[in-house]
Structures are given as structure tokens and as C-alpha cells.
Image: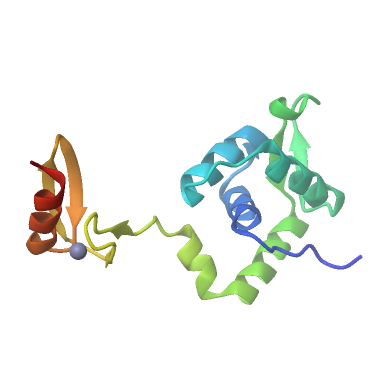
Length: 141
Ligand SMILES: [Zn+2]
């Protein structure tokens, strides 16, 4: 049986989250949504969990209804994660880092610091004061 292929961020995050601790399917779904910033459906999570279970990379504890079950990585599952980590290298680290902040005006990535200003009641992040000024000019009358 060929190894499971991880072809999208949802699967990658699912495995990463399981490597942190055992969790329920819906917890994984909510966390993956948070990490990717996109809506995740049960159809993206549960079939993959089922596949992981078939490969004996996870085991389940708890009642049989899908929402009551918590999924835990098995020792085989940990080896699988280690293989993934070798394969993805840097991408693995990037995936688990919090999302970068983006300047509300020019969309450039703010690595640290930046400039914050409250405009129209919202606290926004900018890369610099000039961007805040530009944004303010465009968005206030
Ligand atoms: Zn900017």
C-alpha cells in the first residue's frame, strides 16, 4: 500500500494538529479553518481521518458517532509525520507559524513592528506611517 500523499494545506494542518495532541474531528476542522483562513467542510476532514485510520496512523477513542471520537496519532503515525517533515522541510515550519500580518494599504507583508492606527473605528496594521496616511485619505471623507 503506497504511503498517504499530502496534497493540500488542509491535510497538512490536520496531521500537524494531530501531532500536537489528540483531538476531535470538529476541533481539527475549526483549527484548520483558523490556520488557513478558509472555510473547511467535514468532507475535507473526515474522509482523510478515515484514511489515516485505515493506515493505522491514528486511533480513535470515545463513542462511535463521529463527533464524539477523538483521534490520536499512533507510533506509526508519528513516523509518518517525521517522513512528512523531512519531505516538506521549510514549508512545514512555515505552515505552523502564525499568519503574517499584511499592510492594509499596500498589502506588503509586515514581519515585525509595523505601524498601527485606528481608522473608522478599526485598528489597522500598516508597514509604515505613509501607508496609514494613504489609507486614511482614501477611506475617510
Ligand atoms: Zn504598506
